[in-house]
Image (cartoon, rainbow, N blue to C red; front, side, top):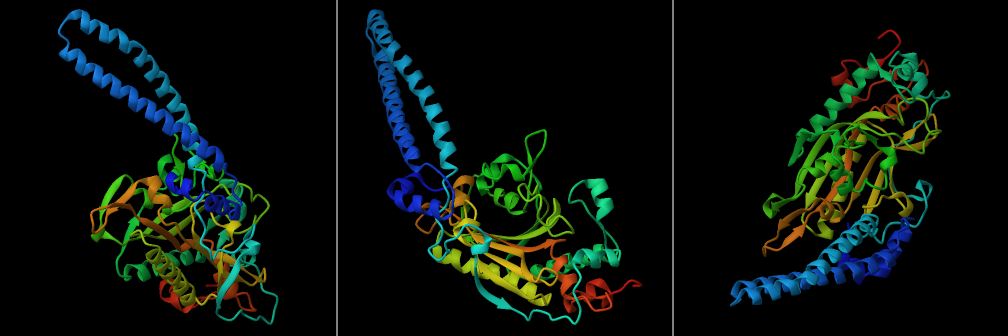
Length: 424
């Protein structure tokens, strides 16, 4: 959430930022509501001051008649105060409703564009594999080796349902141990298993609500199932004041994740690339309120994920997301996309973002700086690894002409084998 004073003082910049993100929000209406909010608040403050002054006069009145006269004159004040408070409550509801729709301002380096088709490639790593045969899709490979059962997955779980089995399950567990080992040894990262069932407040705080409600599963009791460990992790320090000495705080957070994939009914309907239920390890950082610090951590978190892809020997590229492909709260976002031989293109495996104080204002996470001034922390997040999606790239890039699948060197010790074949 942006500060209303900042919005007022930088109206044109805020409007331009919303336009760049292709997000519609009526800033002029918001400012008119803010004028009304301030007007009503002043009226309420004045009426309450009158009441307080009257209470003092009543206490010092020399007679019952004088006391009665003061009380009678305060009747209209009490009525006016009640009306003003009711009006303010309505204005505040509308004001807050618009405030949560105002997007963060994207960094100047964010390119113009409407969708992921307009993202800009920043760098590439690894050689795209050349096959002497037509490469199979991850769906065909996983079925060939009895690594998954999509037909029974749909029967049991519905559309986009799946079972992972045998080497499919083993490969996911190997990947989890691999990423756990890498982050357990990274300095300063605190491992956490976080809730998937989360109250509304952290979703609003992280910017997923109200805009993305259609993509969330909701329970009968009003909680939501999270699509990323970021939501619960950011809620951990909600409404707390941190000591500056604690910063930066770095979390390595895990949770099961759930997404309805609303609006993508016809996309990636086969396999495990786009599914409703998956597992995700997330990097989340809270740092001091400094643009330079945010940029530094953004690059470092991105480098962490690049290192994992390099160890897995997956060719990938990093793209800078355009204005239309970053969310409400992001200042800047990178996507890491690994090569998919069956599709002859890169597909997303990781996403790395920073938010400045957009999320922490909503969640009320603050710290005292060296001068004792309360400031909102800056926040960042980036995927460590999401499974089973990354299996798509692993099995496709490591397939052989006879249909077998080589195990990446980094996973051999966890898998206990070098290759997946029909007979092994």
